[in-house]
Length: 209
Image: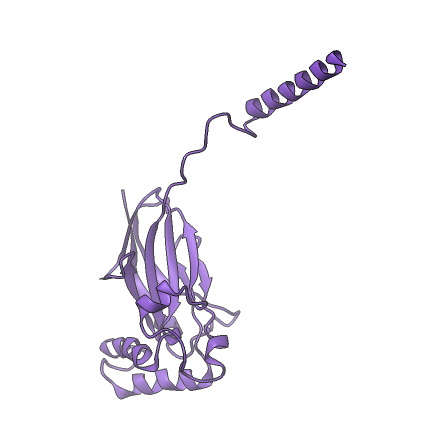
């Protein structure tokens, strides 16, 4: 009996040594995983607002090369009508679609897209593995605005609203990269309608050494 027990113990020890040698297991206690830098991105018609982990608005997303980043994507239409429209008004400061800044035609196009259900975005970052499709349509239930839901961005974040999607990745190249709404079809059309191809934040994702 003692011989059988000894052989069994020897077998277990041999297997364990082999797994350690192959790197399958480690005898060193695993330390805490490296935390990622967190940013929030509000996608609206037709642009982005960037916030740090404390929900302070920033002009760009500034990160360090080789360090993990987590982006939480919030569609503006997950927020109340007034807040959603306030974000959309930012587009009025731009020349877009052949229309000059402050041209009321821009606002008209935004509202048309809302009415047509062109409310989703596919958020990407040039040269990085980011491709996040928003999912606010089920919460709108056919309406252009959400009647019930979080009252503010902070409330949406604190309540972990189901409209919020996330992606975690590690930037490996130093530089300034565009944040953009990615094409969603063979024809180059997007999911957010008229202003899709102008929905680009030039050099807004900044990776520093």
